[in-house]
Image (cartoon, rainbow, N blue to C red; front, side, top):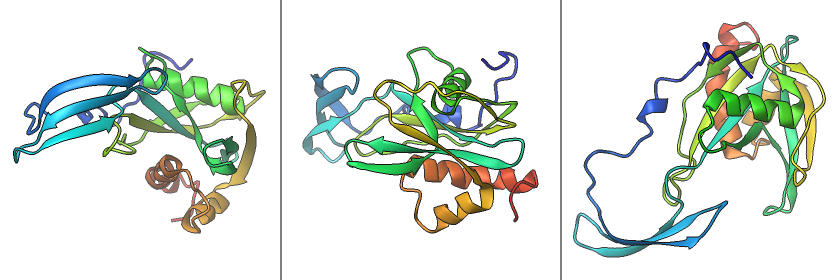
Length: 203
């Protein structure tokens, strides 16, 4: 795992918390679906006085998204079969964080599991809410530099192929709309500035 004294974090990470003042009042709440994907049904009173029933994933679950870059300046992506889509799509390395797990430890674990990678350096990118209308899940993207590759150890239910591609080709695919994983596309967007500054990608 990464050195515990070197824990990069983006300035926006601590801001992903509830506001102190809430314009809606929760009148009642029930859990309608258990782990791993917990769903709540809340009865709420909006600021305008309207009563609503709201079905959503509560705050708590988090996930990491990792763009690995090799010493040769190549990006490591994956092709993964996604059952809800009945299709293979190109993605960045990603996975859910375990309860109590540190962001960087989770990212290092997923990097090792999905592509057999170990990073020399980590850069934290802005975190975000992927679907705030129906979910309180927060995603934490990182750029992993100096990644060496070994044997991958995916979960038994994961069908994953490793893709090692030149960075210009990855960003061509992004601009062409060929990266269909939304969080992965946003990870690539936020990573671009750092890659240009490092001389790994043309401006």
